[in-house]
Length: 113
Length: 112
Image (tube, rainbow over all chains, first blue to last red; front, side):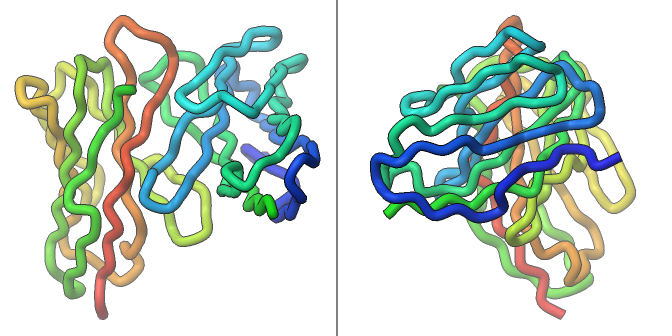
């Protein structure tokens, strides 16, 4: 039981490049979310999904797209990377309902030059 | 946006001492959760307290919730060097969506 996995662990992009951060979970949890973590800013919610085919925006959605075609996968797409998107990205999954704990992946450290 | 605010931002103590971290939030909530993050790792859930609870214990952790003051505290008793980490509170919205919003965290250093 791997829990929440994220790939890649590290990535360097040039400004304007696109890429997809992968997130997968094997817990059959309906709710998944993406956060970014910047020094002194804590975790900020980018997008979340309450189930396959349903996504919604969080606090800082601009510059990011998501889709949820299966329960297991929740990829985060950067369409045109900018230096302001340099951050550590965390994916999380939990049972639907805010009274349940979230399980986090190990993170992807992204640098945009 | 609603966000918990932890206080202090950083805390340094000696092994064996107690560590207290506080969290304040802005609007009514259903639940408040505390998470821990070791350096370079993902967050790990510690404890959840519901809005109708005032205190909860788990091992060396004690969490209190005061909904009238919109604040919570996390107490770690008899701290160990292995408790060195960042600690975050996370809140939902009462009557709101599934979103879980995190504060900026308290960085705890426990010196051996």
